[in-house]
Length: 105
Image 1: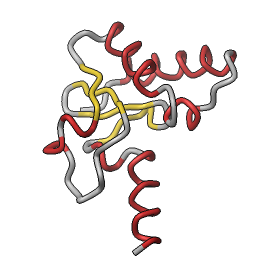
Image 2: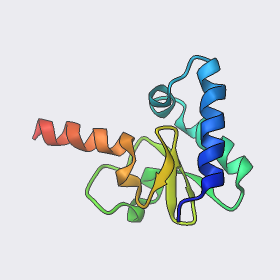
Image 3: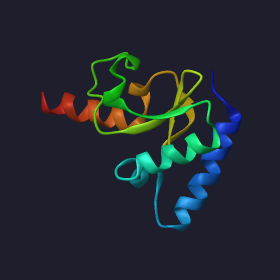
Image 4: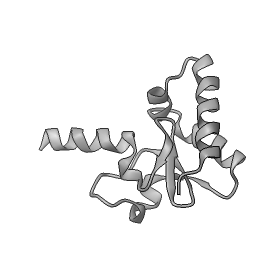
């Protein structure tokens, strides 16, 4: 279930990170773990995880490696998806990875 408090907090974090010169995309391709840990500190009932550590959360065959995201009450969040999604493979990071893989094959 999506959480408006998390979404609102992510939007505030994005303003803070933007002032440091980071876009949501650039956060996700180099600082995703730091961003997720900030969420974890604010919402201790959730957790920051690396996709490869929880492959069973994924519904498709997208490669779960290389990205850290935040999960609370079954909803996955990151800097590019402040509204959250029901499965990590729906996060923009993994959607791009899947498109790239589809293109190669």
